[in-house]
Image (cartoon, rainbow, N blue to C red; front, side, top):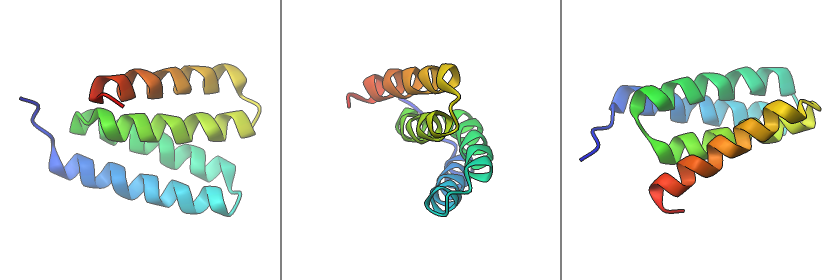
Length: 87
């Protein structure tokens, strides 16, 4: 049974929401930092679902910034975590 760290999970979700808002405003550098922070918190929370969602967004931002190698790694992480939860 997986035990989720609820404080870290809340932090990850808040950082994803912040990153989404920054992305919508095309503030890519800020969104990148927010999604990186969200990924760190999601790891602490031990939440593959939030990790999958976060790395997908991170990859999107990296691709938009023409950081294609980093984007590919992030999308790979997203896929691995999505598979871990069965999505």
